[in-house]
Length: 304
Image (tube, rainbow, N blue to C red; front, top):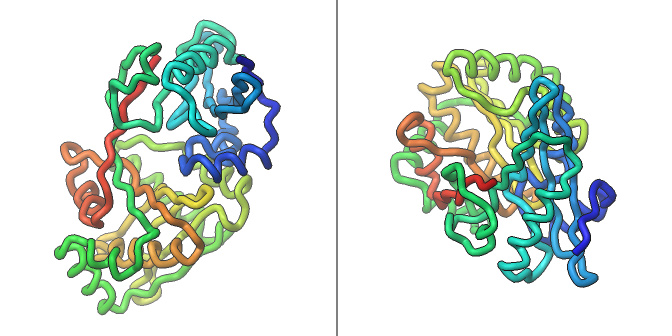
């Protein structure tokens, strides 16, 4: 076995990612966008018996210059059929060879739903998995609309009659600083953690004009709601959104999300990850996502 660190070209990585994975956290642009203080990205290519069998992207951070944490989220990307025993061996080798100074903790959060999957036998599960809602956009629009919960669909119909106006914003829109400022206010008010907002700017810089879809709803020429989706290969992930009181009253997010589905399909996107759901702490937004008719997926968790 050979582990080749930080030598795979972006072109090759993107091509293999497109063929074998839809995961944002293993997309080259995601790793390149982690240009934040104290953070570093390492990428590995694994060769077994003369054949390239895996790619793995690690996001690494040192704390106080002393202790390090490295995350391989929803990876590695397996480039074909690999025996579970070999997968376990490869993950051990990745941990041992990661070019990050010790002391450190290396955490794998695989793209799996079975916590007892045999490929994870060499690691110890230390975190439960998070849940998300995945929408299959390869379906016809008629099927997607029929799959909406009746209450969700009724709110969408009301929003379509409300007089709300939608606009698609470019990644370099003059509106973007205000949108991100509103998101920061929302985070502080609701006390929740997400990727630093600087990550969004970097993602646009690295990914270019087709790296995102931003939809804004306005009422009487005043912006009242927005949703931002990041695009990675043939998939997209809901990244952030907010709504003012008027937007909530007019069901603006129902209208935005449905129009996002239409536009993402037009771009050739066949899968939309609506992001984490937690019916205990965030029952409202979780029901909003679940009632789209998407599949609720709970991942296996984190392993060291």
